[in-house]
Image (cartoon, rainbow, N blue to C red; front, side, top):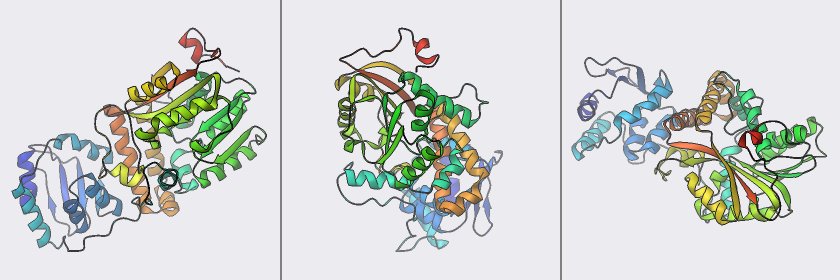
Length: 421
């Protein structure tokens, strides 16, 4: 394989500061004068087959998920190397040389290697139909409650935390985020709150316990709903909290005083975004508030069908510019009252989750399998880099429905300071 690697080194001088080690123990060191920072390990020949058959991140992702491609050293540093190879274009001669080398070492066959079990296989049907959305959401969330507890920690909050300092614990930052949402919504005792995409019920619990609301949470995941109900019973809040297994399109018992959607709209899709916001508006009472917390696309690089995220993490997921989210809310008749970027907070959050996963790797593998553990480790590590670089961001956008006073204070610092009810 060395002649093939040398071709790439010539096209990207100095970019490869890592060792390539193959399944037979042979190695290709970095070019002369370049210190190796880590080792990329090709553990089995099928890694080359995956990469050659899908010469994009899907091929590399399949090799990683199966363990036929691995990294010795800092995975985050390895993923950061992609920037050095941006714009690299292989010639037809480069590709032919790679094919010939792969054939010589037995890495290519007519049939090709099996697609990993953890790759999404959604049922047919219209994109973002009720049936297909259920399948997409359950692919991601019905992994294992115990697995998520290992990753997320006792807070069981699967969205961006809010750090007062980089030294905060994850639990402190997640509690601060839940309180931030409640304060922005100006929750008052006895109000009705709808939490769309409630996960394991953490916001529902916090809002009922700390602000005295009557909260309804909806999720498409049966395991999530089961654990959320258990946590509500344990907290003695069954008289104030309800968890439903339902799509947001199936909620019809408004009006609600306040609506929160945290880390859910990414599953809605651009074609359904107006319907989603319109339904939220219809569920709100006049003067009610809606907080949408979601990941947004900061650069024009949407997930393609060959992306690792689309195939393994969030099938059918879509990210939109924050301007699209705000414009859609305004067109629906919601007045935008506040918008805040939490981009740096999500990089910190993801690194905490990765640290939890690494510390509990054996238990995570035992609970969800090695493929799932590798998927989550790769996607969370890569996502931390993307948030840090500004490729993606996360915004909280607060909107108010007309028809009655919204109850928001004049000054923004008053919005965030003190208890609201």
